[in-house]
Length: 285
Image (cartoon, rainbow, N blue to C red; front, top):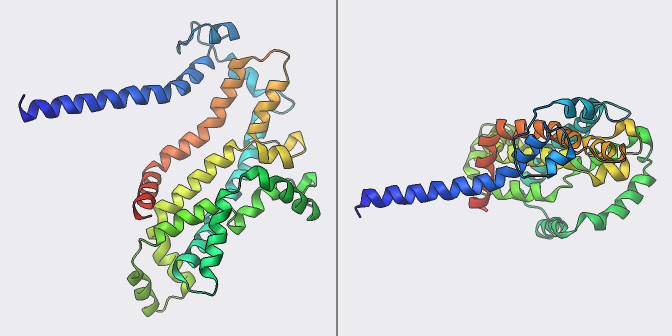
């Protein structure tokens, strides 16, 4: 077999493996999309086929109005929580990471070790002390019920993002900042005009992760959001399941598709920056 033939065989095998793995990975999403257009539970669960026998959008119409409020209310509520969390995460994680990566101060190693140790704390351990803290602050009132979900992100509470940005910052030459200081920039100007443009892929990755995780968060809103009018989509979906004696799965899957759409759009819009950020962080870390 010639070298050219070996390359063709190797390339063909690689593509076959990639197509096979890709099909396995994307099949649940395609099944969910197809099931949302099916007309009954019997048709959904009687086969693993994706294409419905009779195409219908009735599940989307019924699901949209299946609870006391339309699903638009839950979607709007979701992004009232998600967008401030993304802003808070980006600001606080960038400032904190810049401090740990570039400044010398007493106890720096100890504080960084304490910060990293919080990565290993499961959220369930933190739920009770956080709940007591927010209760003492008076943030459990229905009108303030989003504060416990949003405010902590402005204090770099998501340690993973700080760690990720520190790893990326360590790969940026310090000469860039020294040149900026010679030109008269202070620390914040250096961060904004010099570091942030270089750090953009990693910042976009952090924002994207926070966007997707917060959009899917169920436990946080379940603990702190008490009124149905303020429920995000994750609780709205659960509410629509409770509203019927027998679940109409096509309706639930239809609303799940609508809930997923913003995350998919944001992911594909930021895909290039996201891949660069994750790859750069992993290599330079």
